[in-house]
Image 1 (cartoon, rainbow, N blue to C red):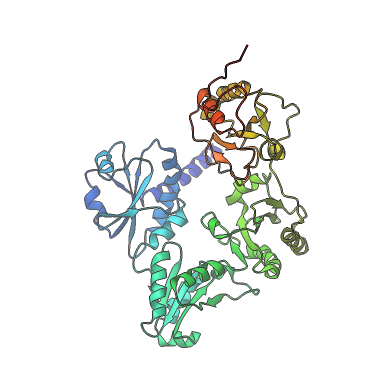
Image 2 (image 1 turned 180 degrees about the vertical axis):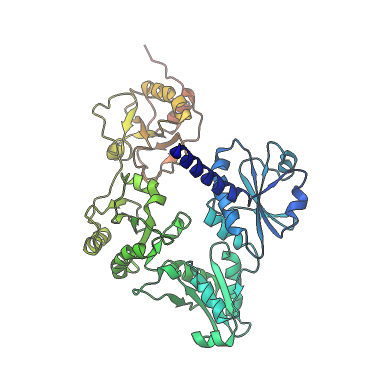
Length: 490
């Protein structure tokens, strides 16, 4: 009985937490949509369908964001409307054709499409950037210190009067308000404290301050382009905190330390490991990019390197300028990381390739490629190649399979052409091939393998035969250039 009551109470607590967030999301319908969104200057509306999988995944993040924004001033409201029931008319009015669709309303009118993050903290940051001026006025030392205490980078302008630099600063702030925080001041005491009357500073996130680099830097330039470059180059410092939202800001060659990064619950433990990475990173300034990432947030990246689990010490993974993957196999230490970084720069490391085993027999009409024999069968073979990148679970791939096999059989006697397939979920795909969906098919002429051509033709047998007959480097022996079977002379 006691166990039952305990489980019941835990369940109630979980439900209570979920409902607490849900209560902060305004539920709208056709009857009240126009009046309710006009009540607040800024409202984010999610147009959804109850059966939509993406909507279900967004729902808890959206509710959490609404809870975090609940007491904001000026207020930001998060609302939702069911396009399948009570909101059909409204969804039609705003041309909603997919779910979820998010739009930002200002004083009851559509302002813009929401193109920001789909996680609670990202939604909050994006929406807070939508209200008020792009740069916050800092009217006292207390304001400035509070502004800089937030664990996020900030760009701050110190201006005694209106200047050309201030105009550049404000223009950049308006452009980047959704991604960065901006503040400015003209208070004499603050200008005196920093010894500047017309300057822009980049302040790095407070939780990333360390003894190996300056916590803030002065901008030395005179246009928006130079300010953009300055911020991009210095924003994350020697070892940045690479999150799912900031992945695109870290460029190859890149070395990442994956471990239990948590600046909310364990900042001291996080910086214990980061400081050791910093010791190495300062030796490679301008040559390599270093970062730390939370292992739980990047399990998909760990899987790409063949890892399912990471222990307490950091796991070091890297990519070079050609996007090849590398693993530091030695246990983490400052010395081992330094050697790994040096070897990466010098090209002394063996790239990691995710690959299935090379098939013991591969004499069928369709050759089976894996990462380890891909060059042999596709890029270096002295033949034209048609290669299919597929996924075992893909319905379109399964439908294509018998047709593709029949194609291989039909062209089996063509010595100048090879039909190949590769499971792109179990093998690394070379960077030159852009594979974003399945199946993706490429044609590689034997004399120009460096520039594969994406096949955009039909998926029937005749379509493939006509394409290959037309584009083959040497005319096929069994088909003319139009794809017609050649007549055999008696």
